Length: 444
Image (cartoon, rainbow, N blue to C red; front, side):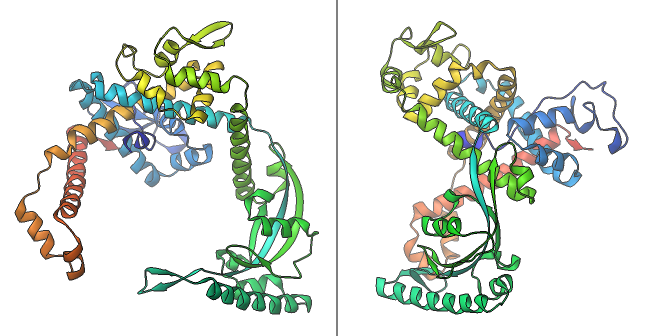
């Protein structure tokens, strides 16, 4: 969980204090100062670098830069990681074996994330897409008891629900045949959130929906609707196709008028293009041989593959994902042995293309490494569970506040976990307020 949390937040170092401070939004430049602290400033350039390192899309970055209220929370988190990172370095935590082990996993995750993003940006695809309007009748295979408890229904009861909704769908199909408006009927009868839009779910491609739905939608001509209800595992549908286009990575935003729909489809199609690319890596003739050498090897001179005519060894692999000076520390072989096949092969692909040596990757990884330091230090040291004690009196006081049902089921261990979590959260808030005040952090 700690490793995953490294990719949520980021930090930065201050810019040159001699940089001019523009007075108006129109003066925004790389020198624009967004916040100050004792001994430094956070400038717009650093802020953008931090957001890029976290893979924020350009439109989100622009929106945050344009809205002071939205900037506040992000700037605060940047500052917290900056100050916590400084504190961790002062304590020597960045040289600890615990951090060096953790950062190996963090760097691996970040390299994979960075490379997948790069592959998505370069992905190609070609798909048919249809614009769909639908009326949906939900069929649940359970009933809700006491407002929350789900009770599984027997098959015959589920079938009764299907028959009821199929009958309703047939009645609406007859109304549509007689000239009633599809969209108005969707607003009145559909169980889907799209009902407010008259059942309009925009453009879809075949793999987006269950097969029965997709088969029905892509068998229709523009302007046609299903003359029989379409049954799926989720319920019953009436489907209408309003447009059909062929899209690829270059024309999709021109062919689909709704820019949000177009971008969402492009992201999905690019994502699955990368998934197919990764699946293809597993089919390479030497994939298994490489994988076995990697996860079982203990000789740093073992050759895994070649890059630009030079041998890439297990030692090179470990060095690429380790802290400087940590190559010979214990744990490298254990780290490699736990790599799943798909990650091992994607790492090989990234190393062959020398992605880990690209200046942009190095720059963004250095930002993320500092986040790894700050977040690991705060969780492992500042908020260490060992430093949070729970007394018997606190346990009894908490138990006294429980309802009768929980008093029976909650053991002392459960209550201790609740109280510990509560104390850690309170300590986290106090620590953050104190370190911001100590560093005189101010958002301009």
